[in-house]
Length: 247
Image (cartoon, rainbow, N blue to C red; front, side, top):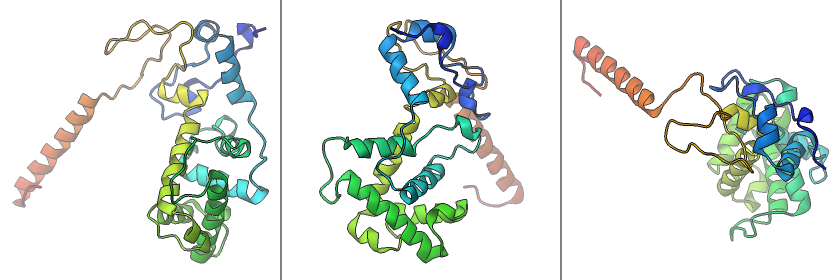
């Protein structure tokens, strides 16, 4: 039995971040909640918001490190803590369940071992570079550690058993995918979520259905190119006026 539409989810408009160009978009508005999604879809969407899994794979220290990594790779400082998209718990859930893509790279261990090695490696790198565990470092120092991991130059014994560059790419991909699977992220980017069963009708460029998001501050590719050309012209004019070469 499905819940009545009055019990729809309360997702902050625009994803709760002031930077969104869709500040008025309510991804779970009453008509969308009742008409856009069937019972199964509503159940899955509600689960993502209300049933955040508890940690069962990561240890307490590993979870703390994982949360700190997620916070640097995809910062959410522009929204209140209660409205931030949970990332590390869902990664923990996948690892606990043993779910994956069904393949792995030849030079990579399995996902569970890879994550444990990487979290240990980040703490080893942080300790050797800054004398503290990764989770207690400041943002700039954490970024330095992750930057070294990304290019395969992070110190620490764990990285001898894990290809840091490849793991970092896989890690970023999973964090981003986890983020954009959440309705709060949908609201932020003006995405209506799965359109089942209503579907979409107006599929032409520059047209959208009435229940879709309306961008308050549109920045089309044309506007971006125009601003770039204007800046270039200003730079060229300034170089000519000073007698210097153009670039």
